[in-house]
Length: 232
Image 1 (cartoon, rainbow, N blue to C red):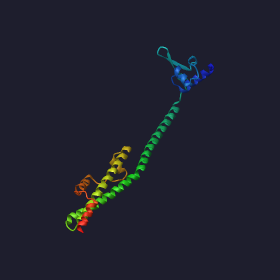
Image 2: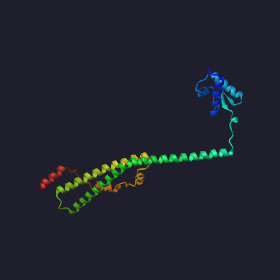
Image 3: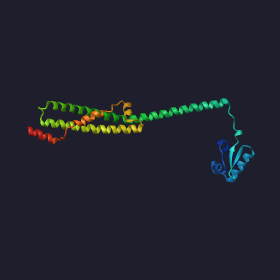
Image 4: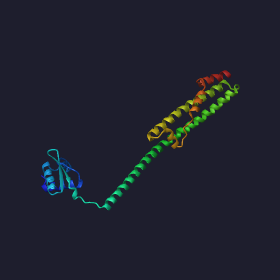
């Protein structure tokens, strides 16, 4: 069984070092449950008798004990000002580091996604150029009227439709990627494209025109071979 002096020393150290209200149960818990409740109660009562602790009644039978605040050292105005300045400095450093952490996380996500984004957009630009080339060819065909064989016409139509479908697929994937990336960064898709220095692609009017000028039928390689065989 622990000696009374050991219990008293442990409870006194707890009350002084924590400077928080304790009842018998919390004092028992916070001293590692090494002592019995009766011993804890006697130690607290002894601290009150020595004016090192004060207490207040809680309910009908409970008591809440606290270290006597009059025994705590009083800081001078200069010491209080120094502590306040140190707290302000630490708060500023905390805010700066938090902002730096947020910035680095955003940069990390951008760097992790920049390569696939650039690759997709380069492919979209290539397909846009291919679609434009085939569109120009079709316009020449329409203006010339004659002089173009059925096989060549079907070939151009197939190239145009294939390129347009491929472009539409890549554009959809690219925009889905941008939207997912922007959602993770909490940034609007168009703003994210602008921040990355990327173009959003063709305007809606251009896409509508491309669909409008689309050949009226699906052309297969078999159709082209048949047309060439008929010409021969």
